Image 1: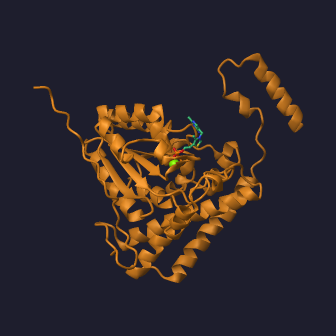
Image 2 (image 1 turned 180 degrees about the vertical axis):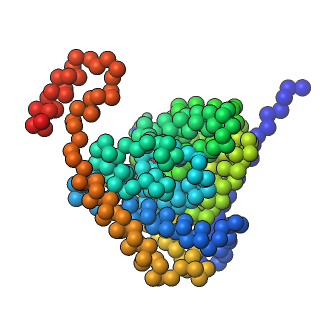
Image 3 (image 1 turned 120 degrees about the horizontal axis):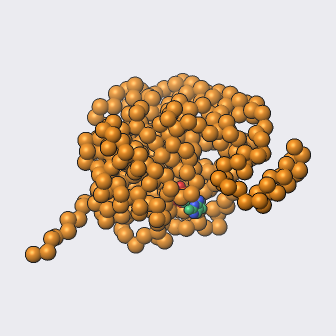
Length: 358
Ligand SMILES: Cc1ncc(C[n+]2csc(CCOP(=O)(O)OP(=O)(O)O)c2C)c(N)n1
Ligand SMILES: [Mg+2]
C-alpha cells in the first residue's frame, strides 16, 4: 500500500484572549503575573510612541522614508515577550524598532532611518539581526541560525517576522523547507496585515489561510488575532517551547488589517478599503490592551500618562542624539558594495563628492 500522507492540522479560528468589554469575555494567560502584564504594556507604549513620533520626524525631514508599524505593536511586543534573552530575532523593515524591546537605544534605530552608520548595530549585542529590506530574506537567515544552534546544542530559538506578501517569495519557501526538514528551532511569525503595498492577500494564495502554507512543509500552523497582544504572546510561547524541546518549527499567522499607509511614501486611499481601516483603527492593539488592564483594575490613568511621558522623553533624547552625530563620509555608500569595484564606481563616487561639496 502506498504511504498515506499525513496532513497537519491548521487552527482555523483565531486565538483570542482579550475580550471586548461586553459580550466577549476576557480570558487570561497562565503564568503571566501583574508585573509581566505591566512590562508588556510598557513595551507596547514604547513601540507606539516610537512609531508615532517617527512619522512626525519624517514629516519634519529629520528621518528618511519610514515604514509605519502602527497597530503591529501587539505582534512585535507579544512575540518578543515570549523569548528568552538568549534567543534571536530576525526582523524586516516593518519591525525596524524591535531592538528597543531588547534595550537598543532609540537613537540607533532613528539613525538607521537617517541612513547614518551609527544606525548599524552589532547583532550579537542584542540578539537582533540586521533589518532585511529585500522581502523574506530574513527567513533563511533565521532558519540557518536556528539549525546551527541545534547543531551546537546551545538551546537557542530564532524568531523571524515577515508579512503576508513574503510568503510568496522564494526565500520563504527555501527557509520553510529547510526548517521543516531539519526540525530547526525557529518560529515563523507572519504578520498578515492583508496587504503587500497595494497587492491584496487574495493575490498571495488560493489557500484558505496563510497558515495552510505550513502544511506542505510539515510545519503546524496557528492562527491568532494579531491585535490581541496576549493571544500573540501565548501562541509564540507555545511555539518557542515546541522549538526548544526539539519538535521543530511553528508557523504563526497573526491576522490584522493594515491600519496605516505601507510607508511614508505611499497613498493607500487609491486601493484600500476605508471601512476596514476605520474598524482596525477602532480596535487597535494598544487601546485594546489598555482597556483590558483597566478592566482588571491594574492600570490607572496616572500610570498610563506616566508611561507615555517616559516613552516621549526617550524619543526626545533619541532624536537629539541621532541628530548630533557628525555627518557620515559619503564614501561609505560605495565602500562595501564590491570586492573588486568596477571603474565606473570611482567616477560615481567622485561625482557624489562634487555634488556634496566634500
Ligand atoms: C525582494 C523584494 N521585492 C520587492 C520589494 C518591494 N517591496 C517592499 S515592501 C513590499 C511588500 C511586502 O508586503 P508584506 O510581505 O505583506 O509585508 P508588509 O509590508 O505588509 O509588512 C514590496 C513588494 C522588496 N523590498 N524586496
Ligand atoms: Mg503585508
